[in-house]
Amino acid sequence: MVKNIFKFKFSFISLIIFIVASVTITFIISKIIYSKNNLKVASTSENININRVNNDCLDYKITRLKGYKYIKPIMFIDNDCQSEKLSYIKTEVSKVFDFYKQNGSIISASFYLKDYLSNNWIALNENEKYSPGSILKVPALITILKMSEINPQILSKKITYNKVYNVDVHPKYVSKNAIEFGKSYTVKELLSYMIKYSDNNATLLLNEIIDVKLFKKLFTDFGFKEVDWNASDYEMNVKECSYFLHALYNANYLNLNNSEFAIELLSKSDFKEGINSSIPSNINVAEKFGESGDLNTRQMHETAIIYLNERPYLLTIMTKGKDINNLPEIIKKTSYAIYSQMTLLNNK
Image (cartoon, rainbow, N blue to C red; front, side, top):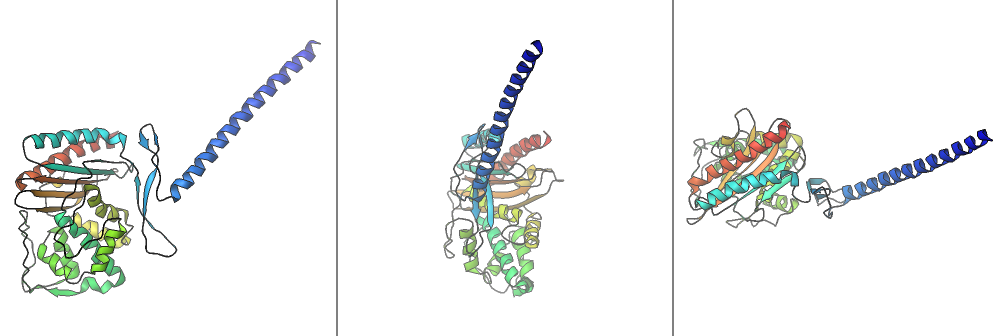
């Protein structure tokens, strides 16, 4: 009788354990299937709603390249909202901007930061509009390299600098390296002068052979408003200005060789007054700066990729002020505040 009771108890306990285990396994499998189904939706949708867990974005905004019948290549994949994990960097930059606003050095300023290791981003005053100035030489570079993918001979085409251009542009930061009147240069050499030295005459020469339709298409491909080629200005915000270097880093608009070549040119810029001056010389920086504005308000901007060990990041800083002499220092201080925090993050 005792043996029979023992067998009954043992069988009953086994049954309970079996039921609990079955329910647990079923629950786990259901969660996995649910997660996979959600992942499939997130990877195929172009417009995804924002969801948050632990104050971080779970979903992504996907920008795809249009114009093809059967394919839609992915251009950019971004978290759909700013990262809470980088919010302390925003706080530090706010202190820098507030200081220079109080002493009258700036009217307004914005920054955009993209951490390529985590794909997180953060921005401040991201909707403020600016005139990019010479940063627009980057889409000109991309356009001509795109042209070379259709016609490789274009880079070896020679153009003679024999025309004086009348432009109402008087930049403060002018390189000593510039093309010389009466000499001929290949398109590839002119690209080098345009990007490394921000040479306006080289840019104007290139404008004579650039495919304007392709240049305009680049902007609409990126989701921006169409460019008026004859307009004197094209306003953009700090995040939009970042997407030119972003596309080169991703190598998803140009082929691999042209993307590499473009960033190599940007890494040889001789402008050292802003972001470059805040970064140790052993760390590569690929950058383009731009000046713009009028007599009342001057603008100075810089967009760059900083190759911080295994944590490269993209940084764009845009500023407005009454005296352009003050603006590179503000870009430098902002960049240093971000570099310091990114270094700490990289060392964790």
